[in-house]
Image 1: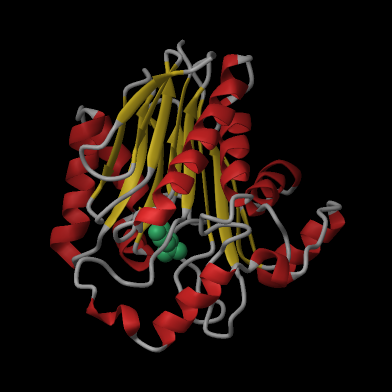
Image 2 (image 1 turned 180 degrees about the vertical axis):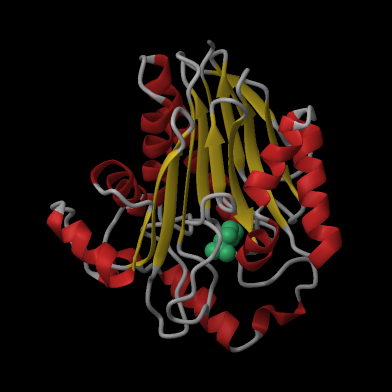
Length: 309
Ligand SMILES: COC(=O)C[C@H](N)C(=O)O
């Protein structure tokens, strides 16, 4: 099986010109890093963890360092991961003071009898596992402070194209050489969210899904809408019914838009390595690595293809 890795950097309104290059570099680095793992014989789970860790560590994205702030100016993060081989899954929500929620989600998957830990319990588990604690200030950027300010003072309110408080959630899907698929999604959520608000990203079936019999998907966009339609599982359901990756993505995103005016995006891979990156938001940075080629796009019609070393 030819390995494939796709990443996204969140469905959002348009990306400002000065950020475009940094975002492009960030998603390229993440896709390349994840692809290296599967090319060298690593598992799909290892690849999605690696790709999402790279994006969590990049302050341009709303996950890990760079997460958006809640009403109190704090960072609370959500993440999930899933192994398509046996449907094992791990998730954390409303976690604070750690650099890489995706790694904690993986520990939940592998070291507990549970699928999902939240808030204080997730924090205690992190400490038990020896996950280093980081000061919240280390996760907060000037940009995230400005985003909260703007949101609180309503400056973004004129945007009619997209719920204004969405930004750069990250995710990855992978197919490894043994035919296993996996996904991971990680986010700081939405700007100015209530304390304790949990979105779609840590909820298996909404923020992502992976099943070797079908494929893998990671989603992004308006969390409350994604939760309502179970966007990830809905998309894979369409594939089970015989739709192509493109058709399945269009059907589920189209349903979310027409039914509840919800906008978002997704990256999707089939068990045979077909892939698609689709969104109804204004933009969604994405990258795909397959057959030693890297495909990268930020907006519709701006895909570039380069050779990987
Ligand atoms: C682009 O923004 C997002 O994807 C936000 C994320 N889905 C949430 O609602 O938590």
